[in-house]
Image 1: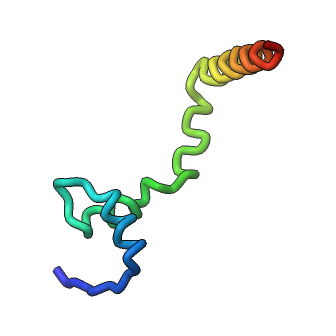
Image 2: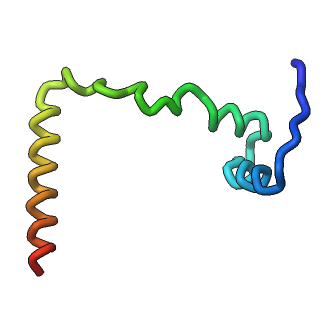
Length: 74
């Protein structure tokens, strides 16, 4: 496996180190943090065809809205 050396600031190193797990290398950390699973649009719409999902979301949203309105009047 080929390797590359990178120059990063102390701040960048500390941030990366904060995300590093005990059992992984810095390479593993970088790959985990930059993996394709971080695409926020990847799962968009995935639940649209699940029966009852839209109704559950609507009900939950309505309940939350009602709760927030009630708290606002206190």
